[in-house]
Amino acid sequence: MLDQRSRTAGSATAAGLIIKIAVLAVVAALAVWAASPLIAAEAWWGLALEAAVVVVIFYVYLQRRAIQLKYLIPGTMLLLAFQILPVVMTIGTSFTNYGDGHRVDKEQATEAIIAAGVQQTPGGTTYLVAIGEDPAGELTLLLTDQADGSTWAGTEAGLTELDGATLDDTGRVTAAPGYTVWDLAELNERQAELTALAVPTGPETGIKLQGLSAFEGQSTRSYSETCDCITDSATGTVWTADDDRGSFLDEDGKAALVGWRVNIGAENYLDVITDPDIRGPFLGVFTWNVMFAAGSVLFTFAIGLGTAMALNKESMRGTKLYRTFMILPYAMPSFAMLLVWAQMFNRDFGLINDLFNLDVNWYGGTWSARAMVLIANTWLGWPYMFLICLGALQALPADSLEAAKIDGATGMTAFRKITLPLLLIALTPLLISSFAFNFNNFNAIELLSGGNPFMAGDAVGGTDILITYAFRQAFGSSSADYGFASAISVFIFLIVATISAFMFRFTRNQEDVYS
Image 1 (cartoon, one colour):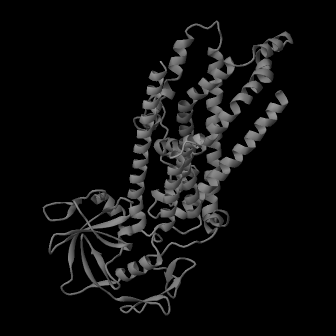
Image 2 (image 1 turned 135 degrees about the vertical axis):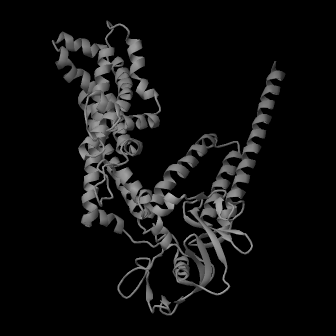
Image 3 (image 1 turned 180 degrees about the vertical axis):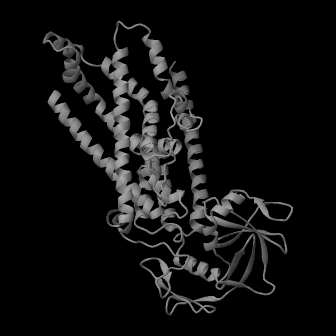
């Protein structure tokens, strides 16, 4: 028996050792794979961080001690990679001017401005052009050399050879691995971005877009380190570098089309407070955001608690069937249900207007759109509240309720003075988490209303909350401003953290009163 146990333990140890070696081999292979682009980009801090992570992993798993660390390390690494690091990067971005027109460094911006002044030279290379985006989402010219048929990708950073491209009968690129090719509608919609794009190929040469063709030529612009300026010999315009703003400015203070990324301090945060064009919309969005989150929690909790109390009566028949029907909204994919509700509120053929014989343009008015969003979100959220309220009701101490009945507290009095306070002690943390979830409920707004209605000239919709407002600043408008959107994200974090801390403090006070 002992020999059999020894052999079993030995085989388990051998199996564990093989698994450990295999896992560490995968870690080493991934480390080498990740190190190559870091070295190519000269990202030495990233390379040092990667090396430190690999050393820690090998140190922990190649020894028999530190058993706890072997279980903590994976979770800690994932926490740092997917929670802490994104937060740190978002905060760092919020102190910069990063966005359209300020995506590159100063050297690349200089080359792009020079390339924008390119004039065609006799015998210069000509290209057929398709427009699209690279894997990072950056605007890209997909070029086909008309002389030799080679394909290239042109961005603000320059030209790179394009492998595996698919061409149509004329030789124009129609598809390329990792790239998105725009259709005609998107091309017309984003003409402003194309106008600002310049692709450098050398110190004073570049690719100039001309309709759906392009040419390589000589620039009329040159850069001088002495004055830190760019001069256009054809027009006489001089752009002087402003390192505080990250732009080249002419004599009238007008910025060149391309700038560079710089640290601007707390300017993005101050704009929210001091700029009336930003402060007004921000305060309006914030007010509605609080109303939406609080209203969603209040309505779902009230309906969920009411149905839970109704189905918690022992004398009631068919409770299992009722409970099954009531959790159906919670069991359905919320993504699909939000799209269904969005169509139900359609003015012309929506179920809501047809069922109640209404003619309400739910998306046309601010308050009708807000009511629509709250109705749909309440329907999706109350089954969750029903489940947790039902569980909390069944866990209430029977002796407290019996004592209340003996003292004559029945009906609403017992509910208000005994049942509800005891429920809130148990459920307040869940209500706070529900508030935080709805405060950042991007899907509910974007899929139901898309932020509508938008008034003429407004970049903020009547149903936008802070998270959709930040999204529109970063991705949803014709000009992306990642720095400002990051500042809004930090504001969201601070607001939710402050409200949550206050509510948890309130919960502790409740526990002291009823303990």
